[in-house]
Image (cartoon, rainbow, N blue to C red; front, side, top):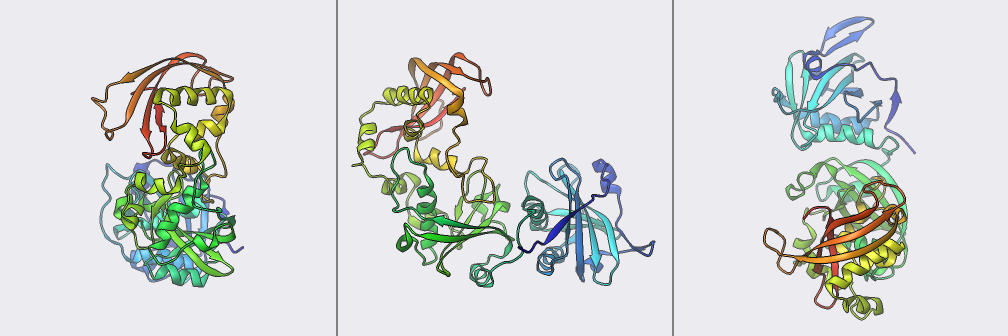
Length: 426
């Protein structure tokens, strides 16, 4: 697998932001320093070294791969003179460029707002500060985040994505995945079918369909894309990844996702699922539920209070199937992506650490709460629940009676009330 960069010993970067902002950017050859202008860098670079002045990225990276350098240089070419706002940038790099003529421009300070990565960044040269598109630091972060990513981008996939305005930057991973047998989710089963059903709606927006390939193995290539996701994805526009699905070499699926912690994003045309289908989540999810399923019918007979009791009982017994079956599918979809490894499409299975830590959960009493003061939709129920929780280790809470505030919604008219939220405060 070809790599676009390699780790190198990092230049000592013990400096505060004030020192960073006062640093210059020059070049050296044979021990002599030459002043380098921003136009020298935009004219052509043969290499780039980047070190981060923060606690997140501990190593430097070095880039010499021509395609990756070309993409980074395209972002720099869009820069305009501009001073950084003093009160906003938080993230920072020191960037060194190897120029096309062999000279090296050392330690150019680069600052950006790491709480709003779509905002521009700023790089300093002897001739002043320049405002750089936010895509530049987003791509630098991607190089840090995916040190084993490949620069080998399938040309056919690149051409396909480019038809919709998307540019693959790195190939994050290649996976072989068995598609579900059908777009139906049974209560309590791991909800990967939700991932495929949801994204197939986005897939249909470009005229493709995974339905003929259900139950078959497919190849999935996961790419980091250069461009930001559409405006409605703010504040996670920089998180865009392209998913390209092949069956026997043919592209049968493609869409955009946003990775950890909630991957659902949009079609390659930039449209969300609700716009593509004309349905809300609640209307759409009903099509994935079989109301005649025996377990579904068993749950549908429960009152809201019985759902709460059964949920805590399942927690205390470590019964993951019942515990997750009593949650909404929207909650289960969030569990697909929570804290996931961004080299993958979704988590490989339930995170049962909490269930393993709880040894018993006895409901002491359940008290309905008035909706006044809550901003959720009509039909949502709120309860205060006193429960005696016993745990092996006091990780998020200790053992003993405690109060939880539980929210329930009716997922569809045919199915039961489900747990939509549980917290320590209303």
